[in-house]
Length: 98
Image (cartoon, one colour):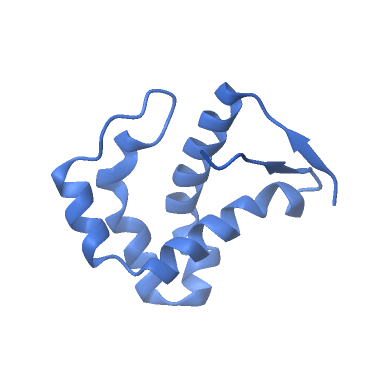
């Protein structure tokens, strides 16, 4: 599969898109995995301000949610979201890990 390079600004947009699509897709891909993962996606909404063009520090509410969140579900959300471009016939972005 071909990979594309993205600028730093694009990385932020892609990260925000991943988070928002993951939450929006809770009733599509995640529901097929389990109701627990759908619940995890809903619980992540307090962390939205920590992802995006101008991410803020995570709020105490976000940190509290993450302490009880199912990490496997979070990974499944990210993995299924990052596959979306490929499923739509687009190149999967190669995101740097900072």
